[in-house]
Length: 615
Ligand code: ACM
Image (tube, rainbow, N blue to C red; front, side):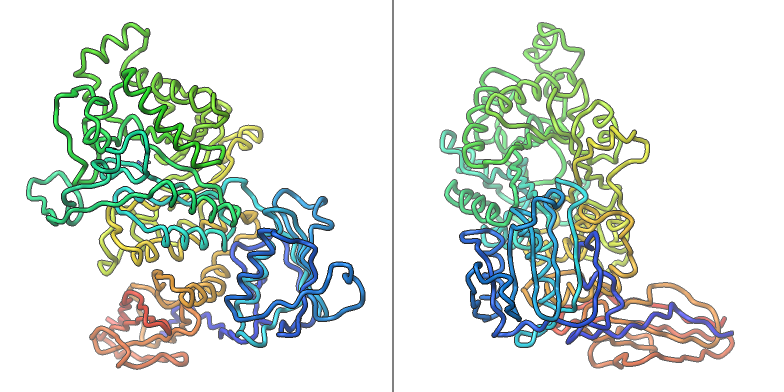
């Protein structure tokens, strides 16, 4: 019997995309509308820019990109726009008022390119233009003619980074922000504090960093409740000074990215207790900064001392971060200490609260009142619904969508970020034992891509409360920048499309087989680590038959696929897959077909193993 293992062979042509069957011209996230027309615009050293915009963030992004490509930008004065010049790019706000919020338009003809937008919209237009032009080499950049109209599905398009469990440098955080900007994400959720380390300088409370940012050692391997835990016996620490925070905020603002700082309370706070035990319910106890993952029983005590302390901390935080939102955590607050505490039990009675959940609700409401009094709003994880939600809070729904649905029904704004929706990027990307250590879970690219943040159970009116979507990068098991890249990419590109693209334009095959390979090659050239997807067209499985046609495509543009049929692990010394293979397996036998994808940079995929069985 003749058997075919998914036959899709589209040769990638990286020098010219004019014949690309991809309706979205390689762009991620896929735009709202792309209409291809005939011809190409050739971008060269002779291309002139026409713009009246000075000191403009979109214009700066354009100039920086050209500079990075060694392309000198020649400017014509805006007065000459429409003066019959050819080989020009006009970057303008004229006509932007008619566009949807944060939208842009690009028209590309053989003679000219025109990019129209205002503020963030124009910046996104430039990002799209950069993606179009990046698909070609430096000196003859060919862009197919088209009319592109585009705007985002959600106003909040978020990505999180936990810098408490492992600390990441300012340079890396800025690289992360650049990556977000390239794919039109606009909210960086900076998880700055947690049990395992406080990472932001607070001038009024220096021990938060001198004590709270340092742990004596870290747990090795996957965390579990076993008594045989190993530790690395290596002190770990790090924090950002206020000057560094200001630098990052300015960097993000220049790229239309708002930073949402997270200061965890009342749980996930043992590092604060290590520095200031008076914030706990047992001030005489000795606390240490967390050395294991998971939660701790000791949390902030809802005392006047604690409220005053947190108000002072938040005052400094709000001076550093100009955005609307302050994330106050609120998740996984263990109630053990509050149950044991006479003070807390008395407090519950005196304030007519139902129980410890009521006390948590009191805590969050009181902090919200303070934050609101400064003209800002809080975001909290969905636990803050328990015991009654603070009146103006935005809810981040992480334990599935239940909390988000309840909050939307109560007319609260919601950001969807459920682990069950493929949005926890600390989950593993395949079931192979070749994947690196992760927290567990299972979030392959396809799952992230398929996620829709708007639950169908909500009414049309309630659905409007879903203001966006976010993915989270928790770093208990992500110790290096390289591993952040591995866990983030390519899933972050799926997040971008979930957050931006109308659902009717989503197309996983086009995304994963055509656009992802191009984008990964581009990110590789920019120094990003990423998970090299397995060869397109094949996966671990058993296929039965006697004759097998195998057609594959590399998952990264320019990568090579190597294979073996002798049972040994494939490497670059093995046979290279060049063209479709025909393999025959005699009756009663089986053949093991194994592949690896190796990118031009040397980055490698996991090995896939397919049993071709005629047994
Ligand atoms: C969370 O993952 N604990 C918000």
